Image (cartoon, rainbow, N blue to C red; front, top):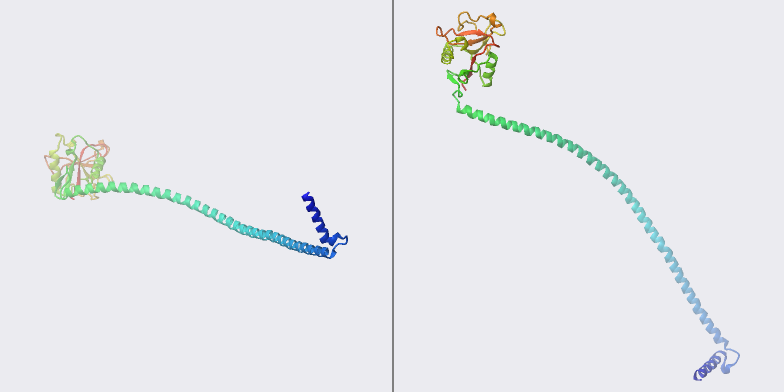
Length: 295
């Protein structure tokens, strides 16, 4: 009941205020118009404010995508420019890589060539070291034997002599083989160019005879008429012009021996100045005498 009474009182107040005192049916339209005008003004202001806000939002929404699109376009152009630069750099890098590969291949070939040269150089160095060692050994031997003959050699005047008989009593060779042996020793077959040397050689042969057969106890000497028959030439190219030390009847180039072009020296009890005879250079076998100047 209390609530109902409150509603009746409110209605009476509303009619009094709106339609006039005492609830007259003629309303206070001025106040109503004023209220409606104020309400319309408020609504208009609100509508205008909302419109302005929407326009700003729309403009901002339009500007924002345009600005973003512009930024994206700029970035795209930048990326395109960079992409071109990257492609150009890539091409240059490929060219540089190809050049580097080519240079590497050339360098590899050069390294192989240099390696071959180094290997050859090392071999040459080893050969030179070996030769150096040999020369040092020879120098030491020469220093030890300076002014003297080598072991197994005999000194006479200013020459050293090697009689093969002293090394082997049984080994004999033909003339060419005998000379080759002398050369291998740094000497050559003996050249007899004075009476003292002839006597020295003959005396040594006497002490080395293996029997009484003088024809089998001879030694090759360095004279031959191989180039021109009957023209006897020493190995030092000196021609023997005198028949000084040939045995009687020699040289005879005996036909039974298919020519005799090389000289053999023997010992003679009868005459020490007549001790040479000629023999076949290839088939006859004898000892030999080497000669070298005193170092």
